[in-house]
Length: 160
Image (cartoon, rainbow, N blue to C red; front, side, top):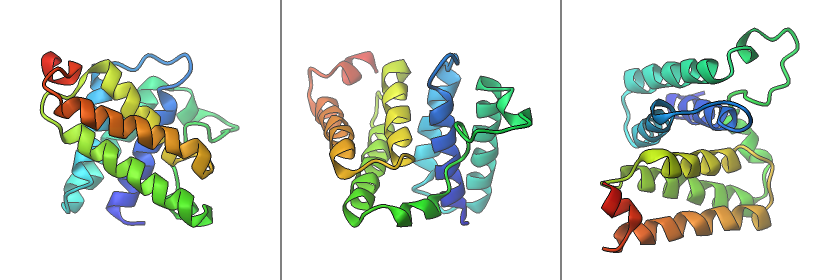
């Protein structure tokens, strides 16, 4: 597994850990964003360092998962090789969702809990065995958020 796949899988695992009775905070959202941005680079060291930080953040959110005697896999890192079992259409939609999430993370003035929760939602979707009908709304929401970022009246721009 290459560094980008390892980091993407770890980000998906962290996104899974943000659901339920955990308490993600600004550190969690910033780490999701930083991880997505790092996927555009090629530094093996940076990818490995961030993968470790993402896994540590997941342990912080769900500490008992890392020591569970009977792991269920709910918060596990995603194995990117599993994408091959998706239909071609689902793979294409997941790639588009991931690309939109990376682009959204790079927008000036982006950040905060609302955006962090959306990035987690997008990453979560990439790691699920969803068909195209379930993935399309996630991609549409990502596209709407990108359009909102471009608008001068955007909440994202005003908050930045």
